Image (cartoon, rainbow, N blue to C red; front, side, top):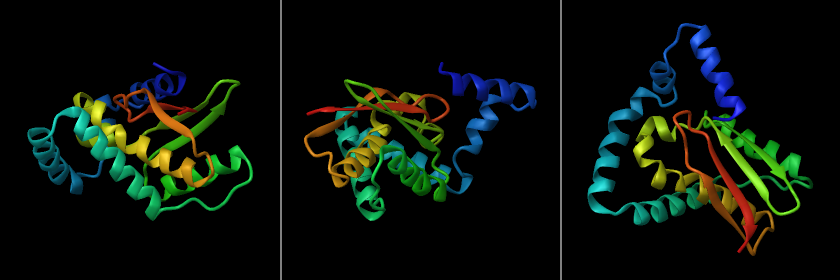
Length: 164
């Protein structure tokens, strides 16, 4: 568990709120029935690897419909991504750069609350597709977004931008 998730767990315990309740709050109840029915149809019709490819395509489509404004630096790009996520209550992103890779940490998306931890293998593909499209559009062609850690119970996932 990373520091932010530990911090959230402590805050939840300190406020007398159960993890289940916080998890429930991450996805609006108006969407729960619809998303559960969609998940059941998806998982009945397609194996997890096909569902992941579908979610990557859905994520790319979202990113095409919500393009980033041009930015000069990585911190500005991160800020622009957070603007889009914030407008939709889809959590936050932190980008870190090392000599070998760029790490993309997305926290508090409603994916795990909407689809559940058992379906993180394929549902995390949505975020992977969004980030791939945004980085492609930003000029990072020839680089690939790969999943380093599937979404956890708080909707936090980690990706790497590496040479394709």
